[in-house]
Length: 256
Image (tube, rainbow, N blue to C red; front, side, top):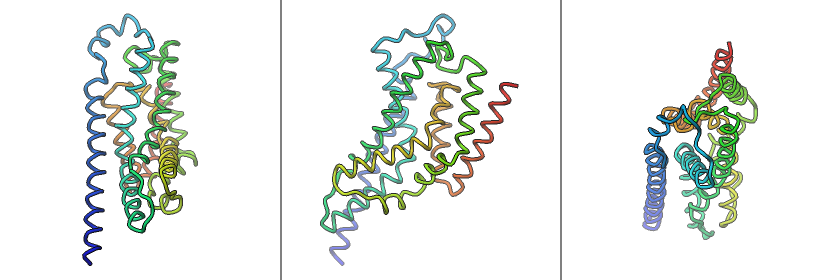
């Protein structure tokens, strides 16, 4: 009994440590976004009618970092149940004599996937500004382009691929129970796999930032909240399909 009590205390302590680290990273990421992600938005607003920001290597790096931190802020909360469950199973395996891997390895694999998405999003933003489909305030400059984004997102929300990826994200126990891998490499691979499933579930919603505004705090918070509710609420999968219908109607209405 004593040894079980000690084990439970260790497990509880580790869970609190992981949770505290997650909260710290999420808080820092959101603080950076709320503060403007290193950009003077008021100055950009004042000059938005003149010209776009020149894309220098430094500005590209700033945009990539902005996207990367934004993805961490938006996606890490919805990934927290999977991360906490990984930490618990990892500790239990350690009690059985198996190797224990830092939860940070799993998280590194997860955020690496969103780092790749951030790089693609930065290049896409650069291209959209070059062909004048994006304003200097990083919003859609064309009703037709905005409509296409909304309809495309709505259609994807109704696809089997979206549903399969969402089902994975909503069932961390099932995933870790059937696809557990031991060791550091195994933890990294599991993090990458979960990140890819999460990307498959949410990438099109993140692209909607090009419609509402890449640096629009209202859109960032709204999309992050929707992603979280879609993954954790019992009727989350129905929310995803309903949102698909709403987005399609919204996009068509803009064209009409």
